[in-house]
Image (spheres, rainbow, N blue to C red):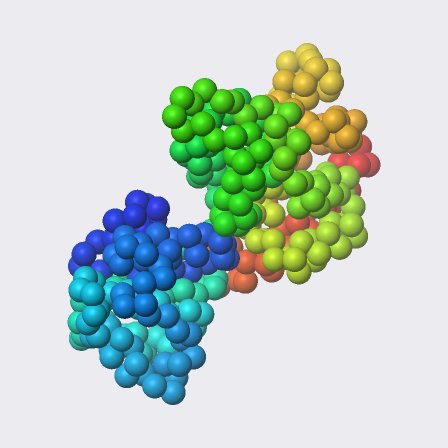
Length: 346
């Protein structure tokens, strides 16, 4: 079965589920959900009596290993967890045989990288009544806001709207990396779980959160706004080579063009580009203010609407077709750059 409320499911897995596939481009989110489900069943991820882990390549030589591990009893009692890394479609037959006749009461957790909708492994876990398929894509704005707020709240800290916006712009490509940056921010500010009341401000974020990746994303998004396809492709290649998720790049680009669209809307009401951009939350990074306003003047509402359509189609293609995500995103960015060249000639 497909799981839509993934975080809630990971915290309290359905008892009838014998195996779960955790897959997608966000490796940090995969690890987080894998560990959350492991703790929910076994109490810890490092209990040698209740947690077993090995690579899926082992099953190609010894498919019976899966049943043996699932049927094994914990020396200390309690339900076991069997964790299998880096599965591919080549292991689909082994998992199909197990799900048709599951042995033992262990929960089998399988991780995989991004899988297309036609993937045999993905379809198996989506269609089986006693299995679950959990997709792990880069956090959208709503999910990222929730991660930020919940992490800071647990430390007794609040966050101003502008600071939340800055964080949302600079996190989200990888859930694990987002958590690390938030932990660093909490350490910088000082957790206050007893009395609460501490507030994270923009100054705190700027002083603490590393923005190298954000500035790289800025390089890409502003190159698109300028119609500079050469720079866009160079930065896109660097980001993906460094492990940045293509979906997170798409999200950052969409956020930039939505902000341009919002600014153009206020300009149509009679405000200057400077006045309209000043109303954005979070505010435009001061070093990029003039460049942003220049793009807001060049891109009319029709071109911005077209750009948002291109981005929406790319997101749908990345998540619901067999087109590789990186290829779908890069194609959309090339289309945007072409539109940007047209905006530059206005």
